[in-house]
Image (tube, rainbow, N blue to C red; front, side, top):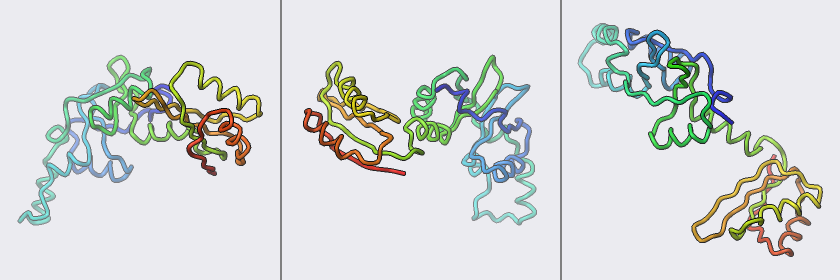
Length: 213
């Protein structure tokens, strides 16, 4: 999967001269955690809920309600936004997006093509893609096998499943440093007792079995 298949297109944006109060109201109205800041279609910043809190007077302020609203009405987005924005291209993979978010410690990436903002992808989009990729919305059985790290071992297991007429919903392999790994299979069958016995007899160690709906 690539970013453009999972991003939100035509995201809500604001400008540098948008009042802080207006930005906060937009976030509350749409339940957004952040808003891209644009100038002529180009991303020049991003502002988050945390940024708004940093520039807002604390609860211990001695200002009256009128004075507080006056101060906030004078604050503009450009005074609170992050200017060095990490972006990504729509043709990038979801893996690249996830790694970039994790490395930079951010929860979203504006998606830019030819210098223009075309979308935004968030942690929630990545989570949703992972759920779909792993087939978590389908009913079946999850098997975890402890496998040695050698060429052809996964093909051997999938051949057994083919012979038993069992379809694989999703498959993931997690390698360990000790030259072994875990193969996680999600299968479209609820009762896999016979399969587990067969795999164990053939020397493939099944370490966990779970059904889900």
